[in-house]
Length: 419
Image 1 (tube, one colour):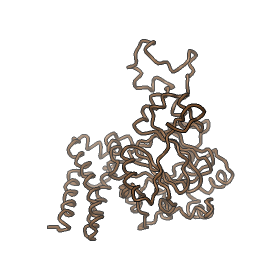
Image 2 (cartoon, helix red, strand yellow):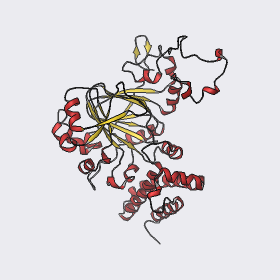
Image 3 (cartoon, one colour):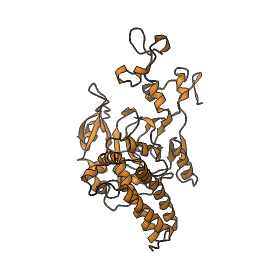
Image 4 (cartoon, helix red, strand yellow):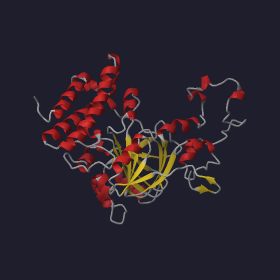
């Protein structure tokens, strides 16, 4: 299936590349997103994804320290260390001034600390510098529609709160994981190369099933396993040691196994790609992924939500297992934002934009309608608590929102005639 490694095939497939200026790219990118398949957009400049950070990069591709420190040097960012005290339950244990990180780690090539997932829009000072209220946003990348997350938090001034900076030396990395919330993810290196390892969302559970658990108490299926020892696959040797490394660790390793070494990986759709400046990875929701900096790297990441790929977002809303993300509030505010956008397009006489925004609003209407039809009062109360409705006057009136959406769509269908 891939280029040979020795006499046996490699594990990883090739991520499809799509030129950002190709007229066929938007349709193809959306098709891949719906199918859960990642793609890489090429010909994407820093200004196309993170215009607020484009002057952090010198013409030769190196870091403009002065510009970075001018903008965010005094900000405190989370630091990840894979040391003896590391725990998956609490991976981030400290924060550091960006200026100190640049001086003590970036400039010295020290990879013991990784500036990891700094959510800069939540800092008032960083937000004023990088995301000024009313600032022009670049158009969506090909294959992505307007980001509904821009409507979520009013204090971010029309910008998404789910935008991040990562910065670290060669070898800094994140382990194989799935992000919560059912949101797509865009990763764009500004400086350096990032090696991304990706597993299709439908095969992530298969990879997990092939990983030996360290403790049967953590295994919810342990009690249902056959009691006959001959009917069980024994993943450990007689002295209790694992027969093999965990497959999630093997997949994320710098040197992956071949299919001869791990034949079960033939069942798994997985990819590896060296992501460089000028490229943007578009990763569908639910993708199992690991990222390793092949060189010192600075990158911009953001989650994305539109109506092309909403199934994972709906599942996150129903399950309520997305710490730090409130899907019900995102849906509520996103629907109101979509209504305003449609009204503005209709009143401005922009027929094409109005048609696109009406299509988006109609899909959101179906999600709101599903809440109205499927959720009983107790379910709605739980949904409201998850979304922080206690501090919102009137809470969330989903039936009233559904009526407002229908009125807005009717206004569009009538060509802007309120009567």
